[in-house]
Image (cartoon, rainbow, N blue to C red):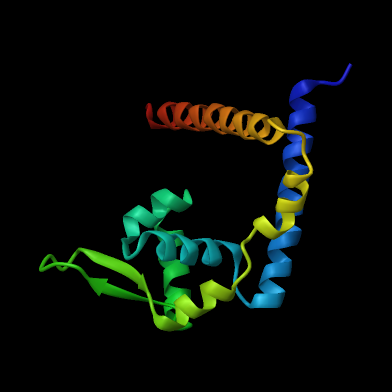
Length: 153
């Protein structure tokens, strides 16, 4: 009998590998990383955002998002703007160049998966989403639990 945890771990690694291969394809063909592309898409979809909100939407830490925004700013795709008199309130917004890029850029996974999802039986895709949501919640709860244990002396 197959060990279910080993099976799950193997499949997650298979998914991670496929995502890595696709990420390399995006980077080589569009000269942008998938995290940068996702960041641009979030700003395009939601409008100017504070860095803190981007970190939450992207599930990345502040320093990683700051680096992504720095690189996007150097390419002229985004700019940091102050939204109020509070000098700490800096939002990130798309430039016209960023908007033009994102409107012609590939969707990181959509092109890879849409045809396969469309070929599924009705309701099958929803079952997959539900299972992934459940798994993500389980893994997040383990991550939070581990942090609590690390904080104890």
